Length: 354
Image (cartoon, rainbow, N blue to C red; front, side, top):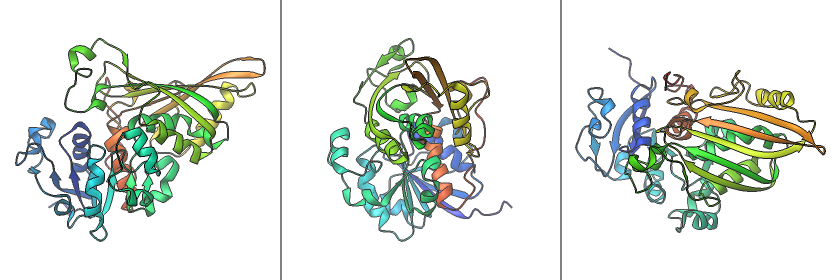
């Protein structure tokens, strides 16, 4: 008989792509038992009705139960819900003693309700809890996450861009106007297709959306300022790409000419030395195929020739938007909060070819 697992978890909102990735990894977790999945879709049906890869692997079904009922008796609840919806569930769950929350939505990433109102175009449903959530980027906040009861997991673009720029922010090298382009796969748009995400339109196409106005801008800015950036103005342009998974971000900035490629690479390697899920690849430049399907992120830099005492720098980051940029990082945060191995159920590399 297999030994019983030490912790109990519930997922609320498990019928989407992020929920599917979360459920898949929880089912193979060595220390955490997935007890229930609450959803407003596929009620009473087996999880495989929405997540066909789970056919025959679990007897769990989608349950149409309230958040408090789903959370009762759990050690941790993972919210895979849209913004504003997640925040409405938090008060009832938080009222249950000892239950920890990992939220994948954008509801608790920003500390200022006015910023939330501006970027999410809605009043915050639970502003009194904003101060209680720790921002869940382990490479920046690991010890705070270990002590936290509530964690807001970062967004997919935010994770990729923050990891790409974190070493520069920590070194005091990030300030002023910063130009970033982020290219993303279609799974980031969710299960329900729209006119812009439907496969026939997306498969052979590149298009921008929300240029300079994406909701992850304040999240990225707030995080990098906390890490050591100064007077930062992020100019971010997201691009939809014809791939299912993955994000590739490129940032453009200038540094003093002494920042050669060798010096920059040394800075990045030292910054991420010992980090379990961030790597500076030996081939120097990241790529989506190397991280697709995994919780790993890749970062890299390229330095241009010196001109007038300055040098143009490009910084690159690659993640899987559903794993390190989503459900995988949520589980990484859960592991830290429960005092478990941070890598539990996450150490597998992605498939090759992707």
